[in-house]
Image: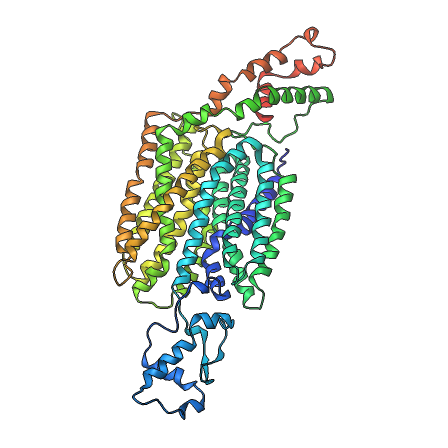
Length: 580
């Protein structure tokens, strides 16, 4: 796969487009929840009549809409106005209201005495559907994270091309499933969102390798992809805007199916079938300027290496098991799992936080939080610049210096997480908005530093999918802890999040074990370069060098002797790394 200079920017633009408009749809859940609620999804789970506070103003307002004939009806002996009010409440119960499809617009319904009562559905409130929405997104995220381990194994075994085909199939299936969902079949959104979440994660993982083409700006490009992924809620924001003009949610998702086209184009024309190697060989993507005989000989040797050793190396799990048993990787798993639990519990309690301040209209602040998440893309290069910062220390090896920069970025992320946890403790509107901004930065920094850490040369690149899948799968299991933690919020007569936020602050402090472990390994020089180790230990080098250094009279008739003599040892090594 050739990557001329003019092709790199086009590839990056395509990858950012994929992450922004296709892979990050699940990150727009805040807006999607409002859209689904307006559409009447899960309203059958509600068991309510009118506002919970039946004050005198509501009573007079409702009684004012009763037909004039009702005023002439004499109350029964011993009856009072509360009898009439009780009858009205029975008339506007949710079961009868939903059957008549009077959820979204003001309607007139009749009571048992054929008197008309005018009811406005905007006065209806329901907390049961909110719990159902929370359950749906929790199940989707947990299942998606757990599925990333087998999908990571698939990525390492079959390469980029086949993995992106699976992602496109999931995108098509998820979008088409949303077409058949409605308030009559609301649970169809669960498999639909699950497939869209899986496809988004696969597209992001396959796009990350494009950052290998940019050398010293590798981590900056990687962070931009992560920021575009978390800004993917812009698609749902556009759906919310178009819904006001009469475009239904199902129609909007029908158009998202077209997003398969740019993914297919980039898969065929821009990305390799296997992977882009790191460290990137000097001659990767460039013409080797060989004649026809030399090119034929090089391709034959490349195929010989793929058949003899390549598949065996990909299927060798001994190196993977040794990697996940190291202390540095174990602490990384603990660090990411704890922070994922903290972030998702924050997202699930945003509305409760706002209500505790004393603001009844929470939808405005939820939309504000969703809007702040769109700033993930412009904020993302900051964390990448920190990791790409080059101090040019002569006494420190380059791969150790890279890991030190990643350590600094992880410390920055830890500081952001502590600040967001502290600001969440106070019931103040300005501090809550500040916590929204900090959590948006925390999401990008968490995933950008994770991918930078696992793509470092300390870890074998052929097991990248399995390593990422292991970390995210364990975090998916950890997210189950949010169910008992949320019980602490709903204890007593009022919802209090103070206890949970104190626990989350302790969790964030405990996650400091990972940066401490990383600091220790950098200080003791325990950071390895797996690329150099693999090159020294691999039998490919010996086999290839013996074949290349043959004398002309030792070659067979089909081997171009002149071309073989012209290839140097450095060119042979570059050829080996490039064609793997």
